[in-house]
Length: 143
Image (cartoon, rainbow, N blue to C red; front, side, top):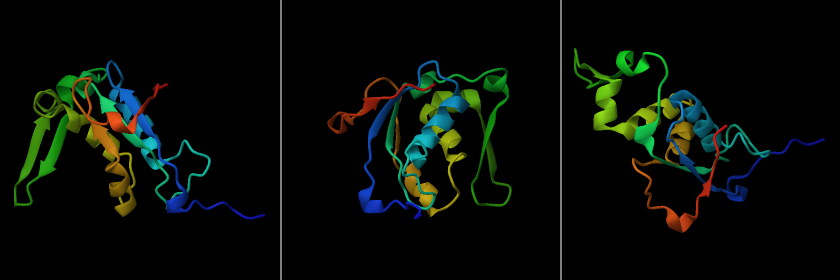
């Protein structure tokens, strides 16, 4: 009995459209990461990019539970000594609402070249409009 291994040229990619309005941040991010990696497909192979493209609209309307809206802090480093910068969830929601979802999904992806390549298939937009109409993304219902 032979094991099936997907080939990059044989992977069929779909486009999914997800509406983030009223969705919980972590639950939405896990579903997006699953689609980007291709774990929803029977031909999933860990070292091959078998994932689909994901378009997320209404990213600014994602919700967090509990006191995370007041207490969650995002960190980044400038690269200089003492260059640790903090941004609260509320400030990030005002300034870059798409970055909240992108960071949540990035934390669930592999920390390798493959993970960075798969993350490029994620397109996040504020509002309900997106420029990917030509790709005809199919609406995807998050459980």
